Image (cartoon, rainbow, N blue to C red; front, side):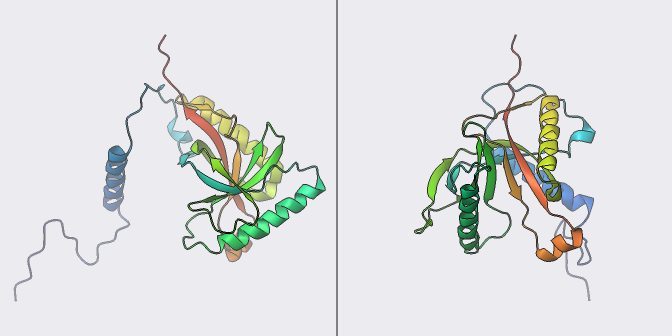
Length: 219
């Protein structure tokens, strides 16, 4: 019996998708999608000077503007504010369990330089009927340079990764730091199972540093 005709480009059943061909196809499809969705920049940007070996050190992420339920500013030196953070964490954990998607965490901790304190916020798509008495604020979103560090290192690790990101941004040529009102350094812990954390012996956090696209020098 003659074999059925295969459609052009049809792969055999044994075709392994983990090949350079399929990776290339995915990258091309993603690139085309980005080209159709992203509008061209309104201004000419400065040329990038990111060296090949530094391309994987920092990720560039754009977070959308959204609503956030937040803890308010909590100066870490006051014990009463430690209780505020604990109450917010209890409410946030209960609220987070209601989510159907578990692909990424929606909670962020940030430091407000102007208010000299920390805050914890939960990004939401819809304002729930019960906010636990916590205030809803507008989160401006924007571009961030992101890198992860070992949570065990605590504040020392957070400071070290900040200066590492700052140095990367300065050398990028096309980005500049953009900290200011409403644009704060933020932290987010990876969603990871207890078994995985126990296996590694440490947790991981992402640090988000506000940046902007740098315009070309027209002089």
